[in-house]
Image (cartoon, rainbow, N blue to C red; front, side, top):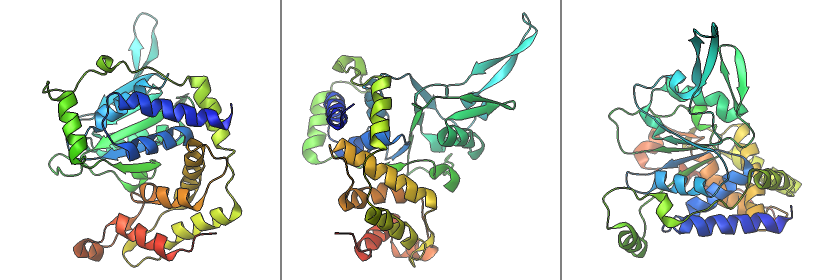
Length: 318
């Protein structure tokens, strides 16, 4: 596969998703970057901003098996990964696979389920495999999780622990659209009170599994100069020294930022990463990996503000 092919795949996916989704260009770009980097994404937004619809439209464009888990407070880990059930006809235990056995998984409203069930995704997201009764089952290299969560409700919510958040490459915020975009949404979807069926928009898969595997392999070979590696390390280490941050980002954050920079360069048709790639990707890579101090919350300094200050104070290579 040539580098131009990755850009062509990205453009085709944008065009297909655009048939159903209005706006959300930054979120789509980050989904594409995560796809080629082989990472997982967490989409956060108030109800009605199109989180679930965006993931569903994105999944249609991939020639991958799609699965969905609608998380609820009463779900158990076995409801996610599956369990061994005794078959009286064969007199043996047989694995009943859970919905996690798929390639593109929509974990809808992941913060509605308790930490015990959230933790069922830890091994799957980090190792692309699950262990059931001491036996490990691979999920495949294509396995990708796109999770959604609502940031405003408190009743019946279970905030994701740091270990779970650290598995996501990006945390993507879906805000309100601009006026023109919102008008377009109403004009396009305002004749029905429920979410539209994606089949109405004629979306089609634009990349095969083998094509995606080749694109990911090519992405790993994108050049990341030593000065950029130093830049990434300096940014991540600065999160551990910032006065408004109680707990900084881990070394995993640095490796993920490097992988994301390579993928973003590939989507842009370049065989090399730049400081601008790193600056653009640092907020979605780091915002869910740092813990702010109580004083910063009182003063109204959030993670994005702290990351912006760190980027301003860290000298970028020329």
